[in-house]
Length: 141
Image 1 (spheres, one colour):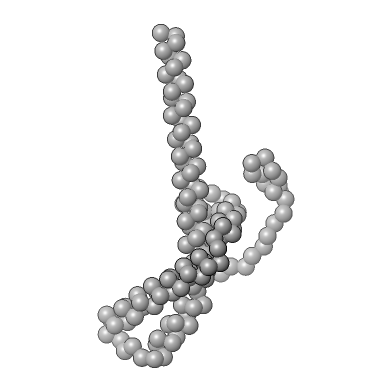
Image 2 (cartoon, helix red, strand yellow; image 1 turned 180 degrees about the vertical axis):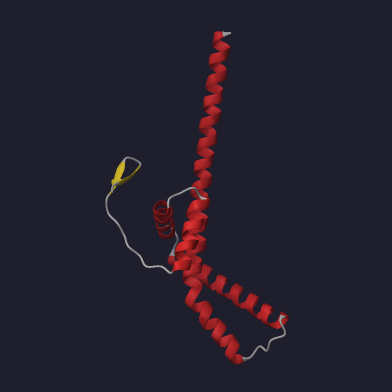
């Protein structure tokens, strides 16, 4: 099957492996944005290419720190002991996720930005159509 975007045929495919949970998350985001999963992923890939490596790394570290702080607060609030093993295990877990979490945030941001831009374009077109209709009505009156 051949898809098209902006009058250009999309004939090449990319295959990636994801967990069932990641696929579900991507499907939900695509549905929320009113896009096919393929188009949402395509936009996310382009969006991630727009962000520098430094920005991606910095965002991943901020997300990791936030996750660790939240985890510590939850542990303490639950009255559980906070020992070296718990902290090391938590840090290891967060480190294994931080880049993918940063990529998700970046993709969400650019997908949202793209959707908002499309909505603005649609609103502008609708208002121009309404103005044209009003002008035509005035001319006939």
